[in-house]
Length: 383
Image (cartoon, rainbow, N blue to C red; front, side, top):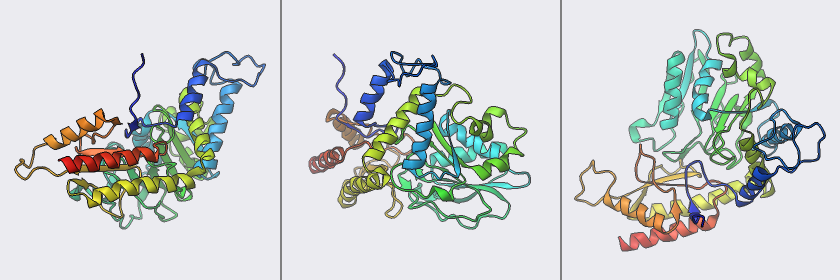
């Protein structure tokens, strides 16, 4: 007998996928429904895991996925879409490799762990300046960017912070002469975002877009032209221009992952697009934040006005006689244990913060949030 799936999946990633997508992807593992092409590359009877990434069947999947990124996510047609590997972590290095300019400085805003990792990689490759940071207050807010220096090569922002639960309310507008780079991994597809302001963006697929192993990258075509003349010392595989020439297939891609990404975007489109998703996500997050703000036991980490609609971390107030460095406290351990037993999966906070966290991505139904709110109310009543 196969194990029973948790009733409510709040994992931060790899995260919950829509049930119809799982069904279609499962079928494709057994047999990709072919249109009967005669080129011999693939066809009925073959799995998505078995077909050539150069064959017509996969080429169509790849092209459709790229087109859906424009149509559904709102990535402008002026930008080239690419499906890379290595996660956001590889992008932390590829960005400065491709965008650093001699005698100029790479600029970042530090909003948490993942922004910090991007800064660390940039410092390996050249002069790097942190224009603003929320570290002193535990990354509980989005800091003001401040003045961007005239010698900036680019500005990098992490627009949603999975661990600390903060989110930019909109993509900031910066000077036209400064390329804006965004890591939108954990909130892309959750609401409309003005990507016309972004010169280069990237997102790991394992939050709202699909399984792990695929990284969506999109870059302004004019920016790609500019980088072509300045990356002669960058290995070919690590150049954006290399992947832009043959989007998604410079080397053997994660064919299954791209198929699932395509299926997720089709599902999102058919469910009303990102405008409808934004409405659903605002309702879900509002229910949980309302509980946290009215509770005498649970404390939301992020400040109002800076809060993510995707990732909501909180802590439980320690007993008055607890040692300040006691972590995790017994009450948190008990809460997580009882929550797991009640069918709530993925609520443990990140190791760097502790406490609890609910990630409420697009595929998570509002019924799961309602159930969690009721569970938390009852736990507080008994605590």
